[in-house]
Length: 172
Image: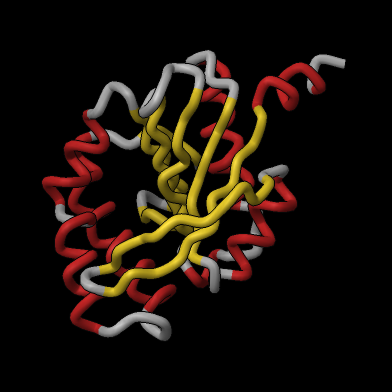
């Protein structure tokens, strides 16, 4: 089931996000840098704030009230016609089952309702699985940026999707 997160989900979401981030990036990042990033970005308080943020939406994929994936999108960082897909995380045991597509569909629906015409994301340059997913979904690489995980400066790809074209072509 895909649903919008509520405040009571914050602690479980914090635990889930930290676990998936650690599992995904531990082979590329020192433990101290992972810990610093996780402590800063995945605390219960941070998840509560992200869930409460009216400019954002957090969607959960759940099975029997267990979080198995989530997405976080923030609308209007630069202007109200653009949004940042901040995260799509899927539990390693549930990858390859279409959950990322389901979460992306929720993000796209939310974006359409808010009048967003451009969706942007950044993805670690070594996360080949995620890059391939985003390319299949219609994102195109537009550049690079630096992403700090603790003290470790990593290179992320910047990818974008033109939602105006996507939404207009879905009408025909």
